[in-house]
Length: 225
Image 1 (spheres, rainbow, N blue to C red):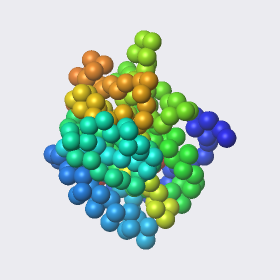
Image 2 (image 1 turned 60 degrees about the vertical axis):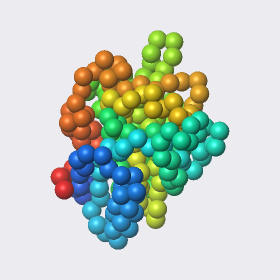
Image 3 (image 1 turned 120 degrees about the vertical axis):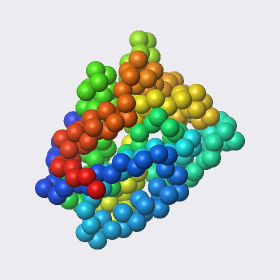
């Protein structure tokens, strides 16, 4: 099996992707309800959507989550979710991008799609002089910190009838101590970082603009909702 970094094949189409940025903090239940509705509509021909949100502090459990990795269940609400992966944290200062695309039009290759999401993050980070790297033995994007490396962005996806949902999260300026209630993504030997932790005074608006440009390079033309 080829490493994700060597997977080839286009993810682009000629169709415009809707782009929506939610203000404030989006309740997780509300986000799930909209995603389910959008995925159903896209499956019957509606235009695709990339939706950017921030959540209040929560933990979410993917399909591979292990009970032992939930260190403090009383700290924040915990949501079971159908996405792949293990436990992760969402909260203020973290940009979550829910990516709802018709994979049938885009090569129908889940591994290529995951590699494409990693490419989006790596290209975005480079705009701010942050070197992000993928690792073949663990999903996400990582930053070298001397002798260690820390995770700056996480991925977790699900595919229903050929349509993707859930997506990625990028740590801009979240409270990194909030990750202490879980073992993030089941990885104990590495930590987490953020733009702010790396000394970058980037705004959410600047990050969103860079993400929009990066998504358009990998997946095609973007149109505002």
